[in-house]
Length: 330
Image 1 (cartoon, rainbow, N blue to C red):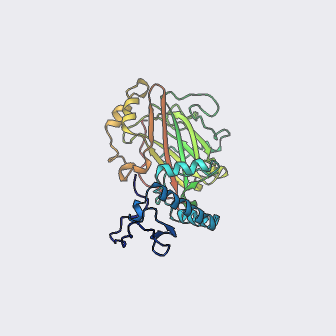
Image 2: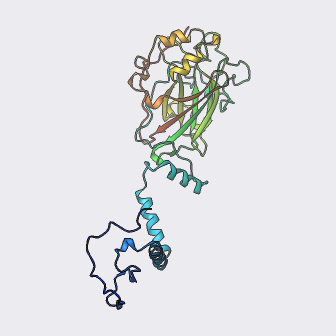
Image 3: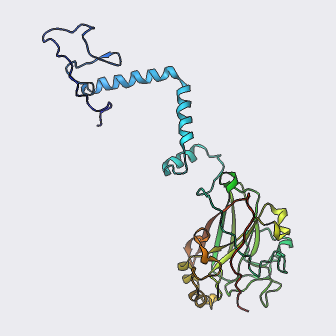
């Protein structure tokens, strides 16, 4: 057991007279209490003396009352940072179940803006899915009218929309529009034969927990592009009728190992060859960096995948877009 007190002092005390009792004036004391073992140092007084000292200190703290406790808590709060230990974070979360959910990390840089590509379906390039009643939906595997269904491996995408201006809290109330190609690399509303199809497009409104979730399929891959998912974030649901209102337009990259597994399936014919012909370093969108845009994907091809990604947005800056468009097969 470690000693309660500090390192032993090398200073010696005068020896006591043998066979006699010290007077109160001659006795050695610690914090006003006579030492039980007058010939020993403070740290060698034994457990009983140590416990007595602790009790005395607790009584002294009681005199200061709640004021001292509040001061200590305030000091801890003032020095708290995002580098707190996992156990401390878990304890804090457990003690405040009603606390507002926050991002999984603190961000100083927002997610890079990217091109919407040639098939956004947001009215900026012909077709406009955002004006169709029913576009606000979580399951985007079918056309909005319930007609065509996209075949492919299921994947559930959850996006955590982070408001950097509001202490990296949730961007509650924002609207997120997601779209991507099907297993064959074709886009609804644009590709031949899919002009009247609206699957793999949908809008969700960010909840109090900062997230939106879409049930979709793992997108295919086409020549010239890495496997990806497009999205736009709008201030609110009423803003989606005008693509220029978007506060962020970007793309999500999918990890190579999951792509290789999925693209071995027959419904993804051509995707394996397209992926083999491109890398993240040569992709015309992700080549300038993809760390913030790579989704965390788990699961398997049989039961389906789940994908998660944080999307930090700085609403105090003008939205930026970069990268080339790329084109799916004709």
